Length: 161
Image: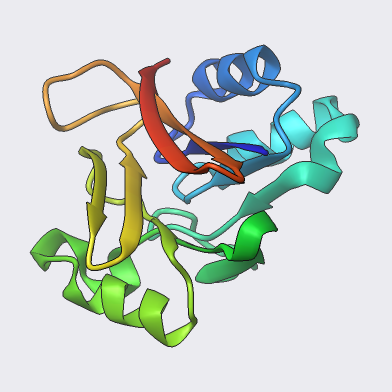
């Protein structure tokens, strides 16, 4: 199973569209917030994607009706927790994020908001922040994430847009 993760597109339809189209065979696409308008536009223009797109609201998604977080059961006993991160204070540390994931019995944790890439395994949790697909704050290129899940395990990766 392959999951594409994107965050903080902030109006950059071209970046979002490019990532989704190039990875069209993925099983899931998850947008971690701050880009709902361009995501809505993409889904309208590519309705065949609608059944495999999940998204959560970001702090800049004004008026959003999207949830603050989502949980996705996955093969091989994995569970994914996805949130933008502002509501659990990720700019001040990841302890609240990890606690929420543990409470929801999730072992794969996705967040955005900081615009800084993170790919780690901590406290039994696979943690991924793909950074920003539009305006990164870490001096690196715009990026997105991939998650591959098989019987052999979980593999997280971050790639340039």
